Image (cartoon, rainbow, N blue to C red; front, top):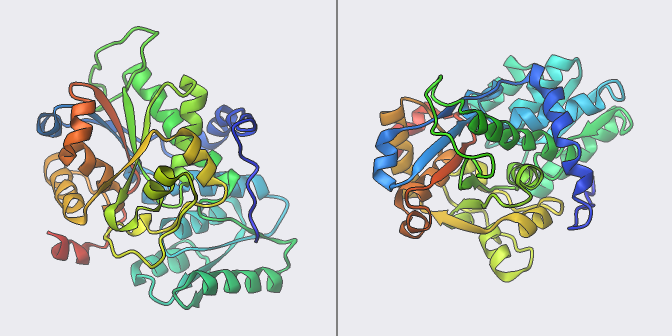
Length: 351
């Protein structure tokens, strides 16, 4: 399960050259998610926001893209896939494996929410193994499961530090960009046209956890705009390893488990995702949990859509970060809404 990076500034073409074909391959197996706007949010921040709503994706999150691509690449070569995850990746991999006729073996911490355990095990038919809530325990259990099944018959699919997963996630911005170019927003609402020489959007805000989606977003932007489209990351203030890494020029990690409602953004950048993020992301902003809660509440109430806490952090930067607002006042800003899987029992605590 040791993962090494083949990514460097001179070799990204081995990934970007496959994005278009990956998008074509995945189209029959994933949803084309909508792009939605809100005049209320625009008035609040002084920008024109375009939300790419992956909360409407199969499984309720963008993770279905990466998981489906990974499973499609190993289908016919192995009989099973495995991973360690307590969140959206676990559900996505289990669902993709079920769809394509593979076994799924998912290692989850004992502390995993029961609603997610039920979805992985009961809805999507995966075999669930419980372990202590530490990275070491997850990896050791995953190694054991692979050996028990047979390493040549059980493929490990990392939640983010995996090029197959990154390629799948790259289709999110690839699709988003195409929708903006064609003006496919708000169920047919007309988008003011720009010239062919202009980008359809002036910047992208994307949350960063382990960096799988962000890496895919960066690579799609590289392919489509030759890095002319500015990509900005967003993290919780309490889990800002990517921000510190970019500012220091070194791959840093959070030393202790962060305490934040952004449960999908707790992981550190991986050995594959860090160099991609380092070489493409203009800057990483942070938002507080309180700002994320306020942003999430506004989206729920005003746009009538459910987004999960991790999705609320980039919305919070657009709504409450004065520096970013000054940078893009009157401009178009794309925001990737990563998912909408919410434990509604917690909503009363947040609001």
